Length: 356
Ligand SMILES: Nc1nc2c(ncn2[C@@H]2O[C@H](COP(=O)(O)OP(=O)(O)OP(=O)(O)O)[C@@H](O)[C@H]2O)c(=O)[nH]1
Ligand SMILES: [Mg+2]
Image 1 (cartoon, protein in one colour):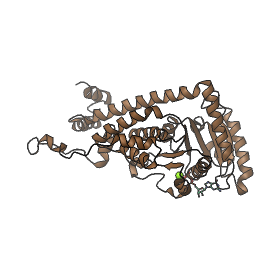
Image 2: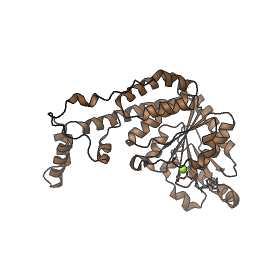
Image 3: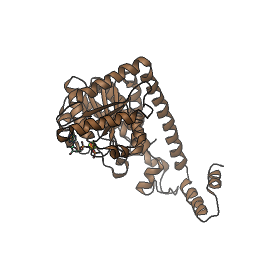
Image 4: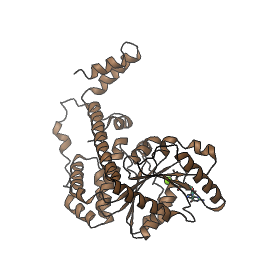
């Protein structure tokens, strides 16, 4: 029930209206029963690689109805043995760095080479605006039409934790449908970058050309997460500048811890418009898989990510059930007043909340 969080209630301005216990039978809300979800059919469709089946499965994952939730978990469990066989590539960069254009060009190169490519998105702003960074599919028009590609916009609602869960689960379904490369786009905002790093095998950072000060603008923290850096838009008058910027990044990286032990973060100039450098990016990622696979690092990271996901899910559920408790809102509002009037300390208020 991860989605019915306090955050959502705040947005919709209130949650369930108070029940007076007289006017309606508590059973009334169960009257609307749906037909059972054909989990077996959807599972078979996904196994067969049908895009429509995959889309149906993902819609089921994103549903808020309790019946659908149970069905979605049944579907996932059934497909779990088929999941995991992909390279999960997280892609980040400031707005305008050319992420969507890169994904279109890179995705097409891979799809043409016979890979099955799924494109997903993490966009925390969509939890607020209901929009999505892939809302403008225009930049991925050709990829979207390719039979080897599947593009799914970011889940357009839910809590941050909910969006992450859906993206992770969607990834598993894509893998079961035979997608061997998963590209996850994120906006260049701290929280979503960490989230995507937490679900990707290889993390790619797109930067633009520029002198030293531009390099300062890219947060050191993000560079420390990256397994590969692309100096993007390396075309036209920009080719030389891109090479220079790549050298500067390489130098700067020497002072940082590598994101993946034993792997030297790569830096390459790329143009998605010409295009050029795309094959090199794929070679680097393939080499990364080979090397980290041999060293055990690949498997270790996947396991650590699963544990982290489990932890996050527990935390989400705890917060949600805490705020969902009967009378909690009133109780919290009352204590808040006390705190604001200087009659109670924050710690004492929390002690009070947990003393039951
Ligand atoms: N010259 C050149 N322009 C590019 C290249 N890639 C993208 N662009 C241009 O850069 C602009 C931004 O590209 P997008 O792909 O929308 O960038 P984005 O990072 O996805 O942007 P947001 O989704 O807003 O964060 C567009 O006008 C693209 O045409 C490239 O390789 N070379
Ligand atoms: Mg974009």
